[in-house]
Structure formats: structure tokens, C-alpha cells
Image 1: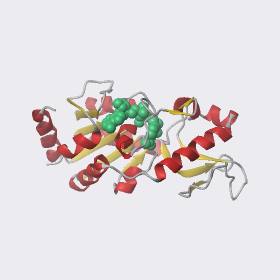
Image 2: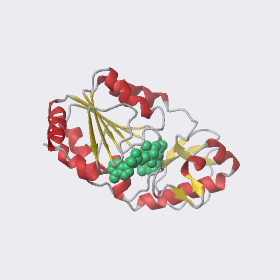
Image 3: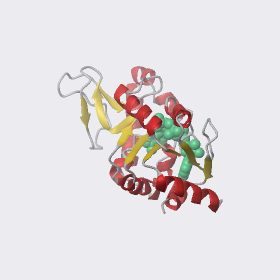
Length: 240
Ligand code: NAD
């Protein structure tokens, strides 16, 4: 790793009043949570992209629910890693800090970050397919699809599936954070899922310094600095 690059990023971070971080599945890889793309991206014979859709839930709700149940069980035993911890420290040191995550695992909140936008929702909430009531549900004993306590319709995970829109409040908050930041740090995302894949370009167009951390750099634009390696190894080096 080029120490000059690390020094430069550290200096930019230290002097920035507004920092926005975008994370993807890669930041949780070292907590033992499989990413969608790459090793471990398959469950039974299914690809994640085939299961995380409204069509899959409509046609085979039991299978989709079983997959989410499996993920919740898996993730319930996992804890944040050093990369998550660094972002907590960064938040305490930065007056204007926003963490946008595509992850649904809840590990950023567990680590202690406060200003988090969960762009794709969370595994730890359900939403009624009938009355749309959202309920936080951290118990792991839901192997079968539960029904709504009010209207008795099926519950679904409160996540954003492929082909579904992002909650407008979360989207607006994300766009604002991209526009106002001085440093935009992208960690562990394959940059293929929109709209998050375009956030770096937006931040860049407003003058932000763009830093990518990934084992296989994937940003669609050329960042100012690309740090190749594991998030849990690189992020701790970025703190002064
Ligand atoms: P992705 O699976 O498409 O890509 C993961 C990225 O992380 C890849 O670019 C890979 O090179 C990189 N990576 C892997 N290990 C890394 C490490 N140790 N350090 C740094 N980078 C590493 O993930 P994505 O871009 O977030 O995909 C988007 C969708 O995947 C989202 O909708 C998200 O909800 C979902 N997802 C979430 C989780 C989670 O919540 N933990 C897990 C899997 C998938």
C-alpha cells in the first residue's frame, strides 16, 4: 500500500467538516457475512438477485422468506468489525457526517453510528403487504411467513428489492449528503446497484474528494484515491 496515498486521505479526512461514507456488503465481509457477488453469493441453487425481487416473493413467498430467515439467523450471530468501528470514530470527529449504507445487516447501528441512512432497508423490520405497517422484529424464530397482527395479511422483509424504488426521504437525504460533502468515501460496494452506484459521480460533480476502498476496485468513475485491500485493514489506517 502506498503510504503517500494513505497520508493524503488522512489529511483530507482530518480537514473536512463534511464527510459522507457509502458502504456495501464488502464492509461486512470480515464480520463473516457473505456478499452477493463473489464467493458465498449463492443460497441453495439460487442467486441472490433471483430471490431479492417482488416477483420472487409473489411466485414463491415461502422460498424467499426461508432465505431471509436463513440470513437473519446467520447475521444475528455476527458482530461489527474494525472497519465498522472506524466509521463510529469518524462520526464523532466530523461535524457533518452521514453514513449511507446499502447493507441490511444492521451492523453499523450495532457498532454505534448515529446518522445512518439504510438505503435498502433492514432485515430487522417487517412490513405488512396489506396495511404496510412496519414493525421492528429482532426475534429469529420466524421460519414461516408471519402474518400481520392487525390485518392478517402476509408480512415481508422491510427491504428494498431489485426493481423497487428507494424511500424518498432516504433518497433525498442521501443526495443532500453527496452534494454537501468534502470527502466521499466508498467502501466495499460493487457499484452496480442504482441509485447508490451514481452517488460518487454526484459528489465528484460538486467538488468532493473521492476515495474508494475495495478488494477489487469497482467505482464507475475514477476516484481521487483508490485503496485496494480489505476494509478492516485499510480503514484503521485512515485515522490520524
Ligand atoms: P456486492 O455483493 O455487490 O459487492 C461487494 C463488494 O465488496 C465487491 O465490490 C467486493 O469486491 C467488495 N469486497 C468484498 N470483500 C471486501 C472486503 N473485505 N473489504 C472491502 N471490499 C470488499 O455488494 P453491494 O455493492 O453492497 O451490493 C448491493 C446489494 O447487496 C445491496 O442491495 C445490499 O443490500 C445487498 N447485500 C447486503 C449485505 C449485508 O447487509 N451485509 C450482504 C450481501 C448483499
